[in-house]
Image (cartoon, rainbow, N blue to C red):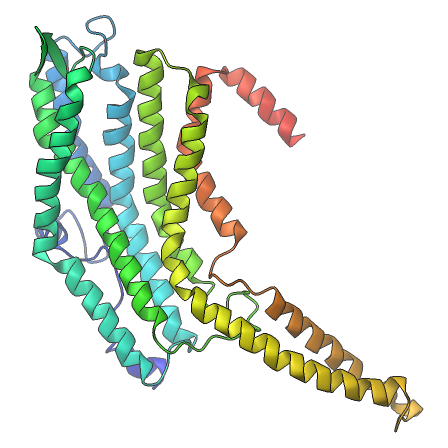
Length: 396
């Protein structure tokens, strides 16, 4: 069965193109079939989550510095959460919809999955979509953020300094009007969009596990050094937005602790390093399900090409080195030497084959994406001029 015959049957895989919120967004014109109109959704969400906090803080006198210990505009964590992290999570949907679906198509386009395995892939996609589209999944996420999420946030308010969110009343901290909107509206909305991405990540993990159990036509000599499925690492780039979001949230938290808690930036270097390592490893973890198949492919390739190499080099030795049956007139025009070199190159490709469908370059890229939001924190140590000077020294 070729690709043309399966196009009308094979659904386009998407982690984001479904669910109750997606259907509601399409119904009111905030999203298209291909997740377009992301800017509209961002504007609406900022108007619901951040703008009321700004207005309420202004009327309560907690907007500017000097009115309270932590005024609204100097609450770095809040600004990052609603003006950076939330928009990134929304914009990521359109990118993910296009990128991941195109990568999954390559399983069939490259004949890695073919024949009787194609219906199994189609069934796996449909099952993943049913989970993604489940109303109960999103209802469960809403219940989670409205109970556990909000409860965890309120428990932290006991030790919170007086701020635009809450003011002391004896031994208690009473929420301001802005604080109530933050706790009952803004936080749940943000947490819903965040945990929904983690739910999608779990669907992605399950989906790849199911695909890895299909009969895959992996080729040990494929130049991508990953048996032909190196393209999967590019699908993982879509989760770079989630990594950027997590890095931004950590940066906002650290900035608040420095600005309002008297902490020093270097106190967080170990935590920041561990944070980046953990989340990057987490994002690449689903690709590990292909390690057994790639390892078996590499082992077979080394065995097959090792045997072929032994047979060929033995014949080459006898003919051209030992001189048995050699015709000196044809030596200059023979292709035997080139064939020997090609065989050696093929064997080298197999030896260099990765046992996971990603490489160091992919890891470093996502490490950079996660760490980039943390770089502005260096301004607590260096001025912009000093940072530029240090950068010029590194480059030159």
